[in-house]
Image (cartoon, rainbow, N blue to C red; front, side, top):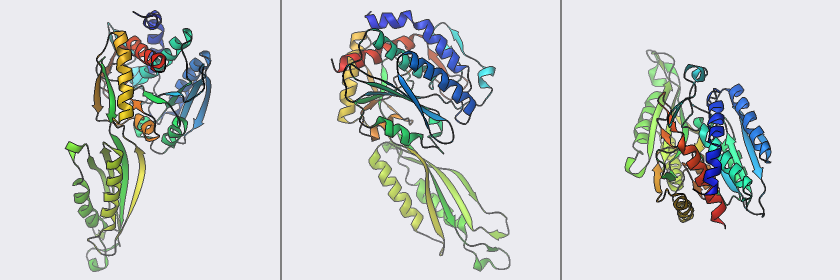
Amino acid sequence: MNKIQQYLLDHQDEMIALTKQLVNIDSPSYHLAGIQQIMRILESRMNALGMTTYQLESGKPGTVLVGQLAGKESGAPVILSGHIDTVFPVGTAQQRPFKIAGDKMTGPGIFDMKPGIVIGLYAIQALKHFDLIERPLKIIIVSDEEKLHLASNAAQLIAQEAQGGAYGLNLEGTTATNTVETSNRGGMIIDLTVHGRAAHSGSEPEKGRDAVVELAHKIIQLTALTNLPEGIHVNCGRITGGISENIIPDQATTSLGIRFRTLTQRDQLLQQIRQIAHQHVIPETTTDVTIRTQIDSLEATATVQQLFADLDRAAKELGISPLIAANDRGSSDAGVLYAQGVPCIDGLGVVGGAAHTDQEFASVHSLVKRAALIATLICTKDA
């Protein structure tokens, strides 16, 4: 066991205590009071580490918390990133608070992803304790990742803060001690709204231009864009239109949940969706396309693969090599970093599973193991 591992093992009870504190505070993406409470706790922790901190207003809901720590040398910083929001409603923390039994921790957000923030902070603490911080460090924590930053500018703020970063480490959880993610899918939520012309469906149907029928034709074309083997999925998850059975509907909307594997696919999908929008079966109808939110994908490019190789060398030093480079089918803010030219590894947080369910769990021992892996990578990569 190296000195970093031993240091973190000596502080494992502190890591558990901070995890418990965070998990027992409700923080769904819309719950500003809980989000602010957690951000105050984390900002205080960062300040105690000597980090310069600031919060950026991201609009509704919440905020972006940034902490910076100077290294012995100037240059591009290492970027750590994560989120503190959960999918669970207010009251969940009281109904099923943090519990620990052997190596198993449970509670809302215990896997996705409150312990990841704890892991990142204690990795920084261990590096500072041993004076091993060569290049600057920056940690970015957001409060609405579970909503894909819908109705906020958090993704733009992450991109702004990540520009010029040396590499990124995203603190989402993973399912096995020797697994991380070198790629994941991006996502978009897009609204297509068809505008037609209302008319009485009994006495003057010929004067109407049916927006629902026009949208129905488009939905068939939109869902045909799905290509699951290529990682593309277009889901017409919500449809609204019309106000009465005896009125030709003059408006209809579908909200699309879209997943893609590469930025090239994203651009192609946007072009295809706009083409479908501008082609009409029902004459004199028009269609608006609105991108409500977007998170880019993480791709296993050469620079990402080199970062993974560096991480695997760090894992070997800790006795957990070889690492497995997995492809996460979900989305995360790792894609935001990657889109800014920052090579990134995802899934460096706690080991566990059953995210977004009442069976969510995480491994106690992975707190130390993952913090040691991050700290060892940072202090050996540029040595």
